Image 1 (tube, rainbow, N blue to C red):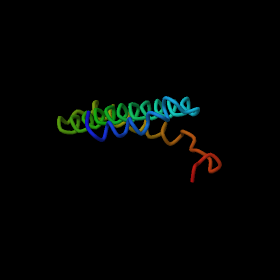
Image 2 (tube, rainbow, N blue to C red):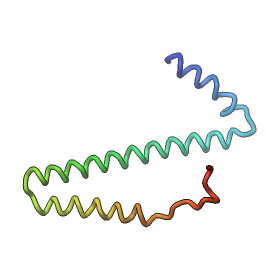
Image 3 (cartoon, one colour):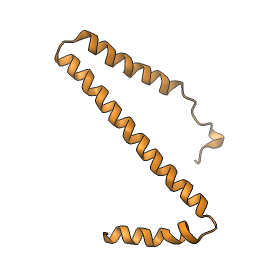
Amino acid sequence: MSSITQRTFRLAAPYWLNSHHRAVGWALGLTLIAMVVLVTGLNYWLTGLQKAFFDALEQHNGAAFRSAITIFFVGVVVWRAAPSPSPATSFG
């Protein structure tokens, strides 16, 4: 293991293993991992959608272009329709 990894685990071990807050630590760690996986998957999907869009343009394929652009705009509408956090729940 690299030095930075060893230092990170040595620093985090008391919090994760021996603290009375260890449940919170594990929950936050697992939440972080889940969010990283979710964002990575979303980026992978968007990259595939972008590829389909530009492939359709290059091949002058109108049906594939309309399909890719429709999926993109449906995603934008869903994203914009999602409720945003209220100022009372933000950490600012």
